Amino acid sequence: MSRPEYQAPPEIYYGDAEAKKYTQNTRNQQIQADMTYRAIELLNLPPDEPAFLLDIGCGSGLSGEILDEEGHIWAGVDIAPSMLEVALERDLDGDLFLQDIGQGFGFRPGSFDGAISISVLQWLLNAETSHPTSSPPHRLTRFFTTLHSALRNPSRAVLQFYPTSDDQIQLITSIAQKAGFGGGVVVDYPNSKKARKVFLCLFVGGGGTQQQ
Amino acid sequence: MVRLITHNLLACHVKGCTTNNFPLVFQDVQVELQEAEFNPDFIRNMLSRLEWTALVNAAKQVGDTSLPLEQPDMMDDELLQKLHHALMEIHVIEGAMVCQNCKHVYPISNGIPNMLLAEHEIG
Ligand SMILES: [Zn+2]
Image 1 (spheres, chains in turn purple, brown):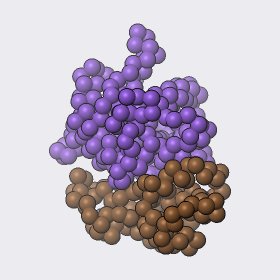
Image 2 (tube, each protein chain N blue to C red; image 1 turned 30 degrees about the horizontal axis):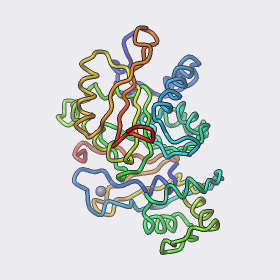
Image 3 (cartoon, chains in turn blue, green; image 1 turned 180 degrees about the horizontal axis):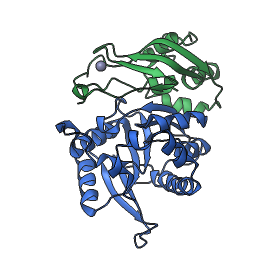
């Protein structure tokens, strides 16, 4: 089967049936949970302090549930209404927004102590219309610029995604850098085709407590 | 759900709307109260990034008049409790948030605000 982001835009791909299926699939749950824990670890937050975090592409709240358990306060955005509805049913603590991250955020400067995103960025690499403002570079630029501004200095954003080529990693990191971010890509299990995971670790300012 | 903690950090993001685009004004709201664990350190931590006057006004719009108009210099436990309630326990589930500048309406339905912009509103 081809990758979901090639089949339809996320708000259409994740209709009611897909949203429930995705959320109930235990293998998805496990992978998502593992990646969320890893993303939180890479955020390098001060220990034992609740942080105010942004979950980008929060979906049905699989990561949000873990953020709740870890004692963090969060807001989540997603473009798929069906996923958000499942998140509502799951009775999580985070605030949920229906939002297209390619349109950019309206959060005031320095709002969040950090941001995570699990398996979302690859969707931004696919243009949805022929309109010039919808090209992937335009959408990525708006996303990274407004995300950079929404984060505190110093802080981090950790975004796990599934690139299909090194060119895609190049494109994404260069646009993130132009938006003001430092940092780069962390690859877990680089030699395993199945387990390989790419995390874009972006720094605002020094990038966190233990980083110079 | 929209809590005031998030509302206080949210400005209008319509193209060209850069002045007087904060705070968004609540309209026709229905709220739900949900108890949340009190964490005074977290509230203290958030204070530096909150706009006090916007918070007091938004709290009024959702039916909470417990906060003083001026931000007090000293945060005692009683005030932190009030802040906790206003920021964390009031959930707006229906209504809208309206930009004072460009008048864009962000509808809130079933607890979820719709932040999607039309093509001509994208920056
Ligand atoms: Zn506006």
